[in-house]
Image 1 (cartoon, rainbow, N blue to C red):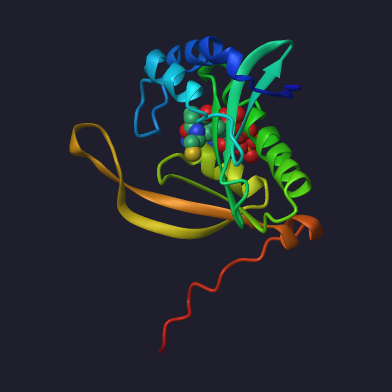
Image 2 (cartoon, protein in one colour; image 1 turned 90 degrees about the vertical axis):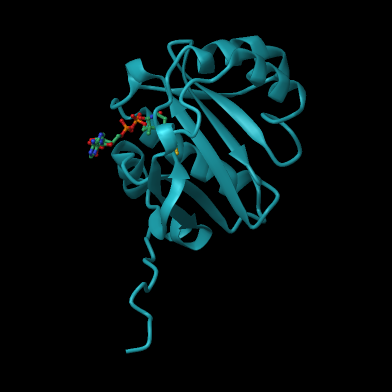
Length: 179
Ligand SMILES: CC(C)(COP(=O)(O)OP(=O)(O)OC[C@H]1O[C@@H](n2cnc3c(N)ncnc32)[C@H](O)[C@@H]1OP(=O)(O)O)[C@@H](O)C(=O)NCCC(=O)NCCS
């Protein structure tokens, strides 16, 4: 699926609220998003400020996803990616992560790393990280709260600017405890 990326403008808060509230996000802390909270967050700069940029992911002129980039002025930039249910599994997530990786490293020269965390059982997101050159760096046991008091493990992936520019994946040395 061919997709394009267009920067979100705060004047589109109603459209964003409709998009996010119209879907279910099973691997986020809040699976159902409330329209009013999106509107008030937008008004407060949550989606666009000095260190945050949000982009619509569009196909044929329609929104199929949203990616929010944040901590863009830090050494490590972060992102939240959401593709609508009807268009998951069509390669949109991988295109988005490849695009945002190039975008962040090009637009923000101080960014050294880009990092993302997801729930351990979010296999689609984990596949996207791996396909896009991100290495697993962290595993947080029972750190992701779920419905009904459930606790899930969380996993963290990141890509280094050097790895991105040389198309390599440097895997951390996890086996570094003293014998
Ligand atoms: C996670 C998400 C962003 C991925 O985007 P997507 O467009 O569905 O992903 P893609 O189609 O580019 O790739 C998905 C990959 O996961 C794989 N995959 C999907 N379900 C899988 C499963 N249960 N087990 C293993 N692999 C799986 C697919 O095979 C595909 O890999 P491939 O292209 O090598 O075959 C999207 O599904 C989504 O928005 N989900 C809900 C929100 C969310 O979880 N966001 C991430 C929060 S950190």
